[in-house]
Structure formats: structure tokens, C-alpha cells
Length: 542
Image 1: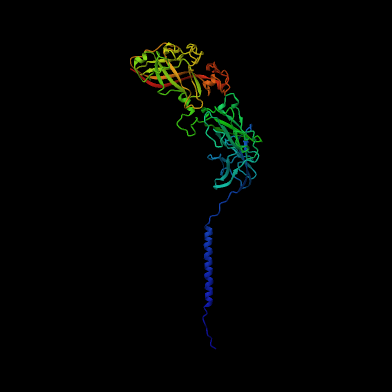
Image 2 (image 1 turned 135 degrees about the vertical axis):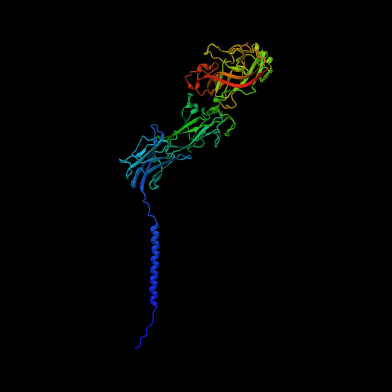
């Protein structure tokens, strides 16, 4: 029997395919295992659950003086004192934020911003324990955020926005503004002497604002002894100057404290203090800086001198061209005058009467006494001559023949203060201008009505003693304004002729003498001695 053997290759192909598939699978899984093994293990996370409460801190008077924040650890890992930092960030309105940094420790009330753990006996913050924080520079109306950071893991553990609990939040002042034209809806700049109103938008997050509790206090009236220095109620009832009742905008105005002829320019920069209280007695205060412009000046600033600077420059001022010289042989009102820049000696030796036209840019009326003088310093030697003020008496006769007379007063009795005005010196014309530098409380840049000071006599409180000028010399002329200053923001007319008396001063009237009020019981009515030296011009005598 013949056996025939044949080669079968199909089985070999199946085995080889199986081996190849197995190899590919092993290679693929090896690649995946290598990739997975290269991924770093995750860092352990700190997990914590925290509840927060923020409450306003009130003074005994009910004023908000700060905030108290309490965080309670509700669960999760304990926080340790070294790596744990608490950041408290406060942003008041649109102002830049500030951040305070606190660490974990037991509560310490002696810190500038008291903070620490209220519970437990160590500095580890565990579940159920409270951490407290107080800050007297923050307000509950600010945007306050607390962030807890684990510095070891560079991880923010918890962060939350603080909000006061309902019912404990005080009122909030949204905005405050002054209006120079209260009759219109659009606020206008406040101009001196034209009156103004004050508006404040107030809200209460708890909805319990007491509408009868919004008051404003104008510090410009402090010391006046009048009702104007007291807190004045602001209204939201739709009665002028309030425009709409119940809109949350409270207004103050239309009263003797804010109507014309107020405010004065000197009020610019003064504070208006405003407070509001809710029905639970929680109170909020704010302050507003009042800006007052001279009439027509607007709010552009310009080149005028700020009213606060006149006290440093000197209240009484004279311009270069406002000096002239007449002769005692003519009436002091004569038009026959010349200016003393380059003067022949012969002109001066015939009885020179110097006229200095000056104005007051301050806020107190200046009463001139007999020590007022012009001093002529000889530049070629140490010599100088003082010529003292004289009083205008009668504009008709020659100045040296009764037109001007000795200035009233007594050089040996400092308590006998007198100033020239109608009726003094006696027998003089009733039409002469009083020897005062009056004020313009509504425009210090322009100043008060100028007064012309007359000087020629070599002796104070005298007349008839002229100076014999040398042949030639150059002089520097300085002016000493001596006298007394009246109470702030009182014009001469208010002091002697009646009119508004905002400070309730006593003793006003035709016989008013500032010397009698040096120690006035009302501080706002007190006067003071005044002396100012004005370096002026040079005079060449040839």
C-alpha cells in the first residue's frame, strides 16, 4: 500500500498571527503603563468647611466704629499656626483695596487689629472652633473678603465675601453734594453770597432707616452761638429744596443759615458733618467738604488766590499805582497830585501829604489807629523817617488849614483805642469815610472798599509837623498798618449799622469799638490787635 505525504501550511499561519497579536498587545500595554507611571501622584489637598458672620462694631452712642468677623471651622482638616495665613481685604467704594494679614494664635485683644482663636487651648484651628477678627478702620458698607491660605501647599483653603447679618447693618451714604441753584435739578457750583443747598442720598440695607434722623452740621458756623451751629434736619418730603418725596435723597436749605448772603468765600474748605440713624439706633456719619467760588468764577479754578492764603500774604494790600502825593496848601481831595517815584526836593519841602489807597482782602474788618505810618528808609545811610497817619476832617479847606487834623487817640494810653470816622475827630465833616479797611466776604480776590490813608506828620497822633527832605536821596517805602481786627466775616456795616448778625454778637451799633471786645464772652465776636508791614516802592528825591 503506497502512502502519499503532503505538506499543510495553513496551521502555521494561524499560530504566527496569534503570536503577533499577543506581541502587539503586550507592547501597547507596556507603553500605557510607562505613561501612567510617569504622571506625578496628586498632592494631598486641605479640605475645610467654614461659616462666616460679620457684625458692625458700635460705640456707646450708636455710631459704627468698625467690623467684627467670626469664622467657624465646621469640618475638615485642622489648620496649623505656622503655615496658615488669613488675609482680610477691604475695598471702600472705588478706593484702592487694603489687605491686613493675620496668623493663627489664641485671641489677642491688645493687637492693633484684635484677632485669634476664641476656642481651644492651643493655636491649632480644629473643627467646631471659632476664629475672630476686629478692625476699627473698616466699615460694614465696604467690600470685605477673607481668604485662608496654606502657605506650605500654596493653596487657598477657603475664601468668602463678608456681609453683615440682616438687622445689624447701619445706614449707608451713597453720595453727598452741594447745589448752588437748588431750584434746578442739575447741581451747580456754590457761589459766594448766592445761597446753596445740601443733598445726601441715603440707603439702609435692612430697610429700617429712620427718615427723621438725617442731620447736617455746618462747621463754618461753629462758635457763632446761633442755631446755625447746631445739627440741622435734612428732609425727604418733596418740600423745597427737596425735589421728590421718598426717593432716598435728603435735602437741607432754604434757611437763614444757607440763604443769601451766605456762604462767604472763607467757607470754602470747611466741613459739613452728616449723620443718619436706623430704627434700631445704628448710626452712620460722613463728612462733606464745601467748595465756594467767587461769583462768576465757576469751578474752573482760574488764577485767583485761594481765600485761605490771604492770611499769609497779608490782608491789606496796595498796588503800585495807587499812591500819590498832594500838598498841604491844597485840599486833600485836590486833583493836583503826582506820584512819588522821581520827585524834586522842592515839591516835598512845601508840605507833602502822601496818599496810600489800600484794600482789605481778608475776612476781618481792620480798624486803623494812630500808629499807622509810612517809613522811608534812606538807601545811602542807616537813616530813615516815619510819617504818621492823620485824619481827614474837611474836604473844602487846605489840608494844612484844617482839612486834615491829628488822628484821634492817646499815645500814652494803649487802652484808649480810637479810629477816625464820622463824629471823630469832633467837628469834622459827617461825610468823611471811616478809617477802616472793610471786607468783601463774597469775593476776597476783589477785596473790600478801598480806603485812602493820609500820612505826613512826624509825630504820632499829631498834625503840623512836616519833614524837611534832604537835597537828594533814594528811599524804600514801607507801610505799617496798625489797629485792630474785628470778628471774622463781619463787614463794617454789620458792626456799626445793623444787618445780619450770624454770631449773635452783643454791643454792635454806631458806638462799636473793637477794643471793648478783646475778651468778648462769645469767642466768635472777639477782636484782636492787628499790625501788618507792607514793603512797597522806591522813591528817588533829587
